Image 1 (cartoon, rainbow, N blue to C red):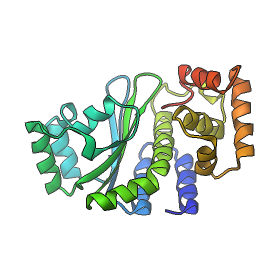
Image 2: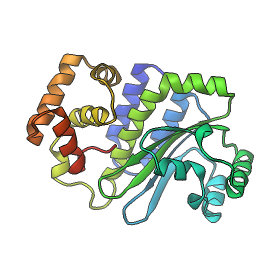
Image 3: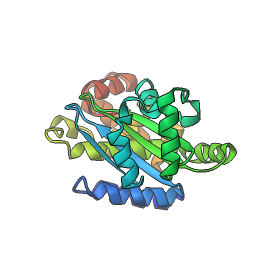
Length: 238
């Protein structure tokens, strides 16, 4: 997917004003990346769940009725990790996992998956997933080419979804500008400055301005201190 397409989708995402609008965005993302499915699943601190994506309604109902959330290797694996997970590296050996996998295939779920775990400041947990049907080599090429963009989009998407959670938005969360949040989030995720500048389509000089501005607003001694303060205040989500 080209940078211009990504930029436009992120602008459309930023412009959404209701939770339902996210369905259109995730469908556009699926088409832009050329995969079979994309899914976002959020469990908020109260225990309520929200999901949007391109899986069939029939499969979503089966997933809920069978309570697969409790045994899904993707959910269980991502809950224990902070970094993106390729489904091939998860444990699918249990009887319940094998049963779920067989059913999922019948409803058009691809054999490959790449899921990004995301945690919010108040106990929220979310997954952003790209899913496709292809061989291992093709999937390895896809994830190598697009993992950074997918991680960036996942955090954009989650941040937008949290805006619609009742009581979520606070004055404190507006302390940083959107670009400052992006920069600090990617620093917290371990990206180099060159990688961050490339992901955000800005120069490293511009990135330095955002980082210094965020550090000043947070009253931090250095960038590491700024990231720690932003995380502790719930201003960034990793």
